[in-house]
Amino acid sequence: MIDLQIFERLGLALAVGLLVGLERGWRERAAAEGSRVAGIRTFALIGLGGGLAALLTGPAIGLAFGLVFAGFAALMIAAYIGGVRPGEVGATTTVAALVTFLLGAIAVSGPMEVAASAAVVTAILLSAKPVLHRWVERIEYPELSAVLKLLLISVVMLPVLPNRTVDPWDALNPYELWWMVVLIAGLSFCGYVAVRLIGAERGVMLTGLLGGLTSSTASTLHFARLSRQSAGAERLLAAAAAVACATMLPRILLVVGVLNLPLLLRLLAPLGGAALVTYLGAGLLWHRPPGQQTAVSVRVENPFEWNLLAVNNAGDEQ
Image 1 (spheres, one colour):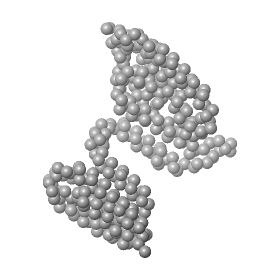
Image 2 (tube, rainbow, N blue to C red):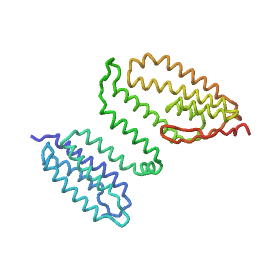
Image 3 (cartoon, helix red, strand yellow):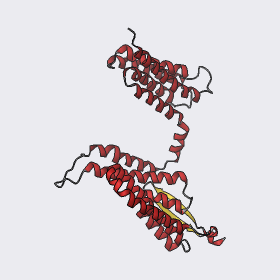
Image 4 (cartoon, one colour):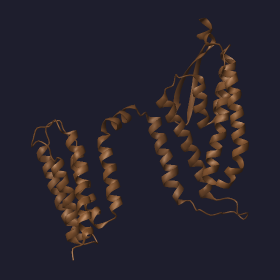
């Protein structure tokens, strides 16, 4: 009796190749016929070939499949070397072909959901080349260092900490304590990214709002220092400090909700009400005649720290 699931899995392997091949074919659509290492038809066959290889070598992929994959990899590397033109070093299509072969094998011998979702992610990653390259060009060393440090404390250090209490009073859990560090650091980095994406010169109120996502204490300190050097901007800077402090309260609710949902329900009314009242107070402080608005210049210095540089009372001169 024919097992219809085999045809379903082979069909998925073919679909995986078609999806990746569609992206590769579109990316290299301007290339002359026969000048590409692999197009949409080739990728479809690669995905199907990976599925057939897994089917022929059995459900427990082992040495036999490894030999088949090694032969296919050698073939793709030879095709890449033979097709490389002077000044070209990109091997993305060759690597994508190897990944497609493996995804085809997973579609037949592994979870179909994994093969399908991985194929979609692969196609998205391949199509995002211009965006990713622009991001890399704009990243500065402090930002790269911050990302690596965030990954260090979350991916490397967090999993190795014991998820149990280690003190006689049954109160200190290293995993939960470090998870708090990771959560706050992640929120701080998200606030930094938001500042960079939205722009650094959009007004002091927006800076206060985003600063509350990172550190309301540091934000208030910056605004207080600026107020001593910026005559006429006290109300606006006070409103920004109030917004930063008000934003801290939803951030606390978010942290509490992740760690302890019942406690969040108890804190929702008092902290939510306090945040609402503080936002209203900030709005009253911010409300000024249009001709008296104060322009503020902001520059982001570090993923975990942002600085206000200057306040120019340009509106008072109008």
